[in-house]
Amino acid sequence: MRRIDSLTRRACTIAGLVALAAACADAHPRSETQTNEGPDEEALDASEAEPAPGVCEEPGSLPIKLAQLAPPERYDYIAIRRVGVPFVFPGRAPDPTTGPEAWTLTEFMTLAETGEPCATATSGECMEKLGFHPTPLTRTSCSQLCSEWSLVTTRGDEVKRWAGISAVLALLGEIDSVDEALVLVASKGYQLYCPSAEESDSESGFPVQEARTEAREIEGGFEVIATREPESCPVVIRRTTLHVSRTGTVQEVEYQDFTTRICV
Image (cartoon, rainbow, N blue to C red; front, top):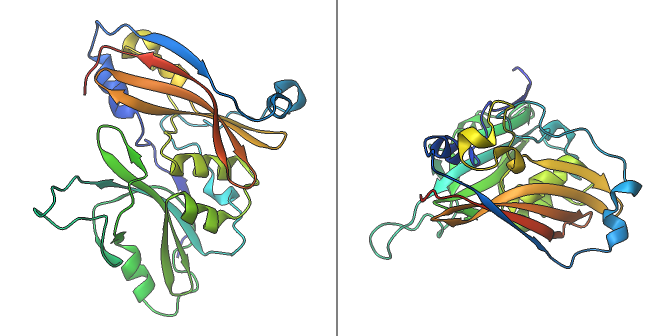
């Protein structure tokens, strides 16, 4: 069985909004900056930290190198998956966020994967289960729609899904790399995005390059720049600087809002 270590060509983040914004010639962004009381300033002093290479190596890719994750337990295979979580009116349909675990969903997207699926499995049940995604789902991010961003692992005959910040921390243990910090940030609902050089502010209607994901190791942990969409009408792109501690605490340090005239 071949070994897999790949990223999807297009990350499911704000790319859809970028395309929508490109069609809106009258969109004029404005920005506002807010600083929160965060960790000790010395811990975030750029002069005391070695700058890390840009995490966006390929336009449209997810800026996480899964092969660099080092969980306490060894796994044959690790994947990042994304699946939409539909809104269900009470009593009209089964709620996909409740009930016992059942690997029955066939509609999901694998954003990145590394390792050899079911490499140490003793039967074909591992690969069969890996072709599905489990319910109940966890809403890890909600803007226009809600979705679950999770990791799936295989080890022996076990296939396991890790969704939500507590589960991801249980998988990773101490956060000791930029890539693990990015996984944690994404698990909290922040968007990771790598625009191409051709995606310019004037064409898109809002500052696309400001949405670029950045991350580096600093004293006491990691600094990550990621985005959120706190408002959808008008669309607001919130560029947020985060401090991620080695114990897994994610704290907003400051943010800058870019507001467009686009409603979704």
